[in-house]
Image 1: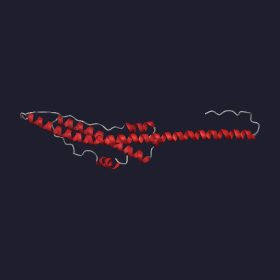
Image 2: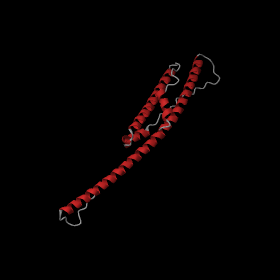
Image 3: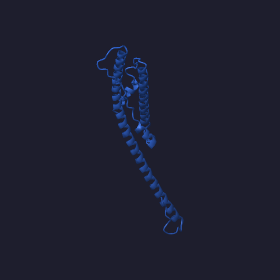
Length: 186
C-alpha cells in the first residue's frame, strides 16, 4: 500500500487535516476491501470443505456397506475352509478341496477432514459442524481399528484351528444409527 506525499506543500492546518482525512479514508477503504475479500475467501474455503467432506462421508458410507457384506462373506468362507481342513485332518477325502480364504477390508478415507483442518477451513466452520465431523471421523477410525483387530484375531484363531467367535453385528449401534439419520443432512 502506497501513501503518496501531497502534490503541493501544506500551508495551513486545514490543508493538513484534509490530507490526513484523505489518507485515513483511503486506508479504511483499502482495509475494508481486503477484509471483504478475505471473508469471501473463507466462505469459499468452508463451502468447498463441506462439499468434500459430504462427498467423502457418502463414499465412506457406501464403503461401510461393502465392507460389512465382504466381512460376512469372508467369515463364511473362513468357516468353510476350517471345516474342510478339519475333514482333511480327520482323513476324509474331499472331492474338490478349495481353500480360498482371504480378508478384504477397505479402510475409510479421512483426507477431506485432514485437509479441512490443515488448510484452515475448520476454524471458520460452525461449531456444530466441527463437532459432527469430529464425531463421524472418530467413529470411522474406531470401526477401522476394530475391524482390523477382529481380522487379526480371526486370523490368529484360524491358525490355531479354533472356530471364529466374532459377533454378527460388530459395528457400534450408534454408528449405524448415525449413518442412517445424518446421511440426508450432510
